[in-house]
Image (cartoon, rainbow, N blue to C red; front, side, top):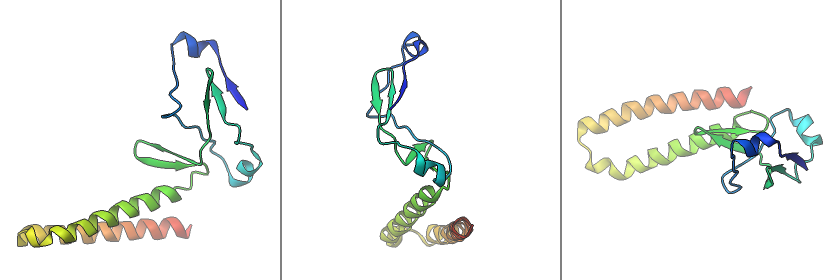
Amino acid sequence: MISCSSPEIFAIKLFVNPAQTEAVFFDTRQWLSQLDTSQGIDVGGTHIQFTDAVKLLRVTLDSTLSFDKHVAEVARQFHYHIRALKHIRPLLTLEAADFCRVNCRQETRLLQRCTVRHFSE
């Protein structure tokens, strides 16, 4: 287990909430496969478990920085909102519906290009 109990943590009165704190190693798959993360890390007497990915500023960072989980999450949210628009379509004016159609088409093309480019590398 990795331990971090330096006096600086106590001097600045840093308290770690284990329910809201995650730890992750970023490196290649080969190096991560050799690393034992089952024990977690001890920060100022609080045990923190390692995870495969963390969400920081609405961006999901996985341990290999491949952004696979982030792209999948953005695509999932996008499709959810597109499906939600179908339910309110009868309530929209013709101009509002046309605006949504044009913008959704542009967003769909952008998302498809990003997804294809990301997963083809």
